[in-house]
Length: 520
Length: 72
Image 1 (tube, rainbow over the protein chains, first blue to last red):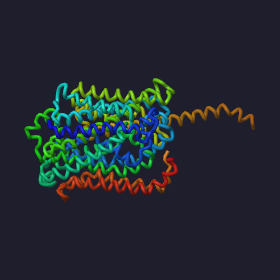
Image 2 (image 1 turned 180 degrees about the vertical axis):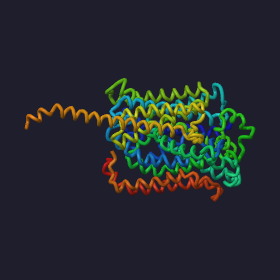
Image 3 (image 1 turned 30 degrees about the vertical axis):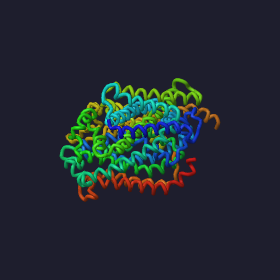
Image 4 (image 1 turned 120 degrees about the vertical axis):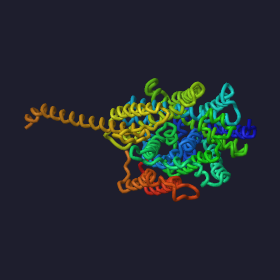
């Protein structure tokens, strides 16, 4: 047990637990109303929204898994950089309009907008369930992140004692989310980001110095992994994969309910635009984080006997913790690990709130208890947030580790299918709800089928065009099908309606004729 | 739903530049020239994250006025 690191770790954990409760009184609002509990009263300005979104998107699991991707596969892991460009541009163009409609019409979730815009309870239910299902594995992954750093601090990795820190983290998370709502993670995210920036900046300066500079760091990467595999006579190889991952994640990231919730809690549409100018700072830090995967290669932590047991248990995802343990003094390690653990708590809290908002508004209120009063709504949401987190906890304890990661991959393929409803709904008039619904079905079914070709271990699907192979992100391929179906079905319905109108007009003319004749 | 004046809407097209720069993989999938030890593939993408932020800032400064009235 590393006592110094553990002491620092516990200190920061207690600090953020206290902050989580203090947040109840921050910018005080009536927390028995859902827009206050679940959207922080739509009062967060540019700075708080920036921290909240950063805390929301760059999670503990991202910090562990994306550098591990670079560690294992090389250049592909850097797709996070083009994603950082594409997703902020997507949000800049689309979400200010969504915010404005939601504010005007009192919507709390994106599915509320869908219900209102397409006048369909069922479509909003479908969108809400897609969101809730996509959120659950993510919460589970965050808990796994906590488990990993706690294990690295010297707690047992298996058996009863390995679960205890999880229960403690879960309790803190559950109670502050219940009492403070979105204000809790918003306040904690400021501490989280400060710790994370300190960790990353220290790591990207100090560790390469130990290794002999960035030239050495990149020199440690095998040549065939340093760049993307270029196309050859038979396949587009990693070029098409990289491009589709960038486009797919670029669209999908902000469709996750926790991201949409954080955007809708902004004080104005302009707050969102300003944030899309400022958020690339996180993308740069995240990119630096990914180079840490290469530092882990250069320092050969995988071959050090003291970490063998961890690598065996957690796989390549342990690369970053191992490297931090290898280079950082104990107190700094404690700080870095608390940064990772808190990076798990902030998004988990927002995710459970987002899922609770969806359940309350688009399942409970629409189907189970119509016209329910605001206080009841907030109460249901608070309880749901508990149920969602408990579900994730049970998931982590009972199921093998890799299930959560596989479900999260599948979630990416599903959540992107909600984009046509949102974008067409905001910017066009002619798209029909039936088109959106059938498109969604086609997208989800085809995307899930594509995932079965890799047995859910990867979301890369190899498209065959004649003899030529085009590997790509399944979310993008299935979205193309979804869009095509949405457009075609809507177009056919519009034609059908025009024909119907024409037929009616003919019929009406025929009936009116005598009248017309008489009046002459 | 969105009703900015057509001349203002034109600024949004600028945002295509960083998207295309990021998708121009055959152009940047190279080791040389290096910068501070970073192969081209890496520093090119880092640079475009920053440039993208700058271009978004420019577009923002041009469109914000026209959105002000219809978003309150």
